[in-house]
Amino acid sequence: MPGANMRETDTTLAIAIASVKRSPRAAKDTPPRLVKRRRRAPDMAESEILDAAERLLRRVPFRNLTIGALMSTTGLRRPSFYQYFDDLYEVLARLAQRHVKVLFQDAQRYADRILNMSETDMLSEESAAIRRAEFVRICKVHRKDRHFHRLLARGSALDPAVRRIYRSYIQAIAQHTADVIRNLQRREVATWLDPDETALALCLMTESYIFEKVVDGAGSDLEKVADTLKTIWEQVIYREPPHPK
Image 1 (cartoon, one colour):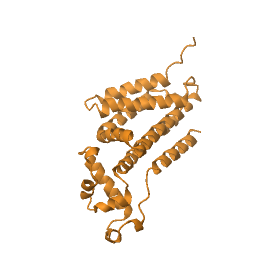
Image 2 (cartoon, rainbow, N blue to C red):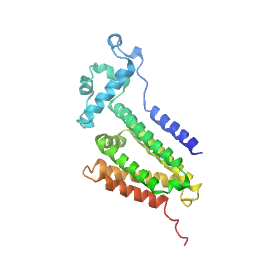
Image 3 (cartoon, one colour):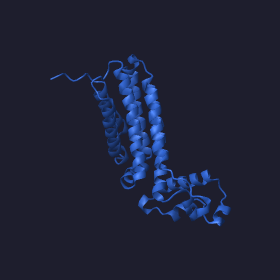
Image 4 (cartoon, rainbow, N blue to C red):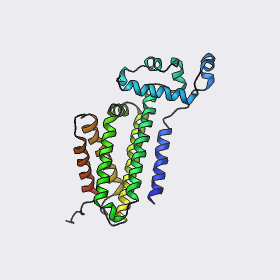
């Protein structure tokens, strides 16, 4: 069942994301005076550091970010940083976790909507309009947070934890796409496709194209990008089967 596959995918992504988070250091590793002076609950202090990092990274390249500069914007003492994070790469990985979860949840809602359509509706103009609207939305999200998507792409090349989060996001979206293709195949549509390989290729292509045109290409026409992606996806999934040689 598609729903079962989605639950498995959700679990896989959750495990990948959870593996990045390291436990806060034990109280015995922290100077007693710091524990006594803590004025915030641990979750609040941790979130405050992440929020501050996200604000700073909108203005400062990651390579120029320092723990001292980060902590000076939080009202927390510098040693508090090490109660929650080992280094700035872990901060980057946790910020990636935030963004990936939002993107994944949006993609899951879209996939659920498509999966719940009837065969007639799935091939209708309304369905095509939904697909286009989804690509427009994805482009707008990437443009709005383009500084972070650049950071995520570069961070994934430098840090294994960030790379795991990014890969698990792509794999989770690809699994949802594969579920949509399998659902179509049960209705005698796109029966010639390998769902998993096709979904992964489409998702990787889409991510690379959006990065090139929307994240790095700030002047690109989002509507044109969305139309191009919609056409490619429809030609791959909904076109007539290839003629046998």
